[in-house]
Length: 236
Picture 1 (tube, rainbow, N blue to C red):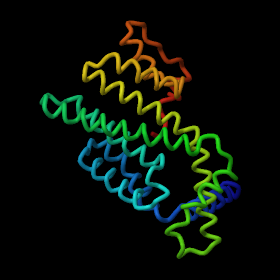
Picture 2 (picture 1 turned 135 degrees about the vertical axis):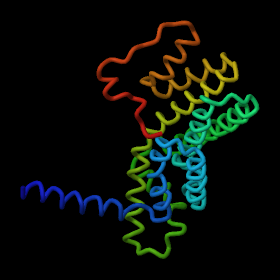
Picture 3 (picture 1 turned 45 degrees about the horizontal axis):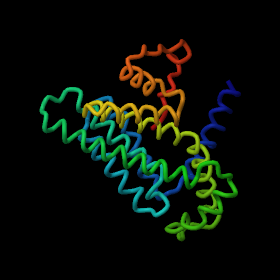
Picture 4 (picture 1 turned 180 degrees about the vertical axis):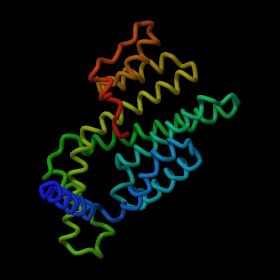
């Protein structure tokens, strides 16, 4: 019992310490994002759009985050929401409008992800620290230097994690773009998008099976491990 209690205490202080190191300028955005899954489960689409617009305004007020992978996530999720609305929509004009918004949002996310990867992919902690010192501290002048360094250290760790995850996020965006093209009956463009998705993430089974459908090939079935831990279960 004492060991369990000790573990709880250690965990509490660990997460308190981690949370204290988050860049305070974007803490409100991350708190808001906690509502995304709830709104999605309850199909509150208007709330989702409001949420994403509000979060984007927080990120884009800070120079360092204007073209960050987090903003790419917002654009892709906005597109995914539009695509989900298409499922039960019969109005042709509204469908076309949703596809147009989805297309624009996905291409925005792809541009952001690709530019972000060109800037950060493969860089070491030391290289990232040198890069971030150019603009990261703008707006943090009111904080003590020790706190500024905590924020910087946390951000560098997030970027290192994102070096892997953003390739997958880019793959998801290309998968969604392929879906837009299929709705528009642009099958050759859809094939190219799915191929791009697989190039960026070779475990993207959704893209692979969508490609197989278009090419008249049999779909791949998930094995037991893939069913339990589907690779698509990635935070976009």
